[in-house]
Length: 72
Ligand SMILES: [Zn+2]
Image (cartoon, rainbow, N blue to C red; front, top):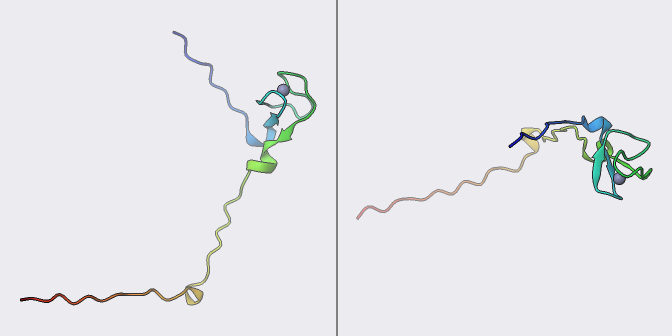
């Protein structure tokens, strides 16, 4: 049994070919089927984590519920 060859393509140079459902690293032509219809994945998947946090003063108050234990 042979181990699969591990590869990676950085997102900024990864292109999805919708014609053959392959991902390649060429922006001009699909390396598998030569289609020129490619979708740059960084435009879809790349993300910057933008933490949208409200200051504490604008956050709604925390509702506390107080239960009293009855001891018989
Ligand atoms: Zn293709």
